[in-house]
Length: 220
Image (tube, rainbow, N blue to C red; front, side, top):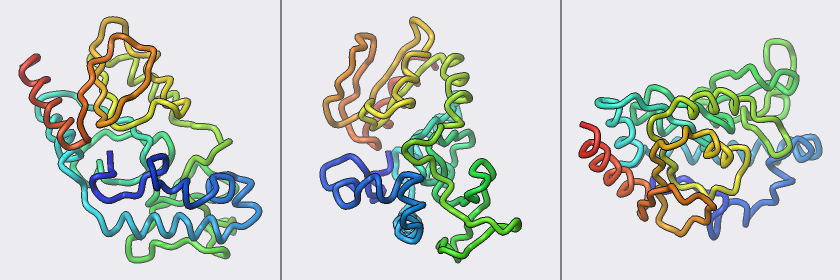
């Protein structure tokens, strides 16, 4: 979703996981072993985020709120949906512009753009080391239950730019009510066992544009 804005992706060719080992920068064990390396990795991601803008795909989804109730469930940790104007965004994997403490990972603190770094020795009011408010590999995904409830009540379900390989997010497809339309926007072939998906083979911006035209033609 955010690749067209210039955000480094994780799983694509030349993605971040080709430059960093997951175990080193995205696990509790990696943080325990070398906390400053992990903090620097996310400091870099945060600084990158502050240099980019939402793309037409983000703005297109926000524009759909004029005619539809839109809930966005995102695996992305950036804030580009919010900056584009989307009002109901649920982050499954955390938020880059927030921190939390090692003792209480479920209580986030906003990170100010003027001071985007977290370093070893930065602590909360209780004296606990701060860490990124990110769901790392091996950690629970606390927002999956609220996400399931949203999907279970959906009239239309749209998947944008994901491999459908990352769980539990990929499992949300199983909660779409029977008979409700499912659209999948991606420029690449996406392997799925589902036969009820309508594919829009395009990048996020072009795909959302086509989706908006389709939905407004079909439902308005």
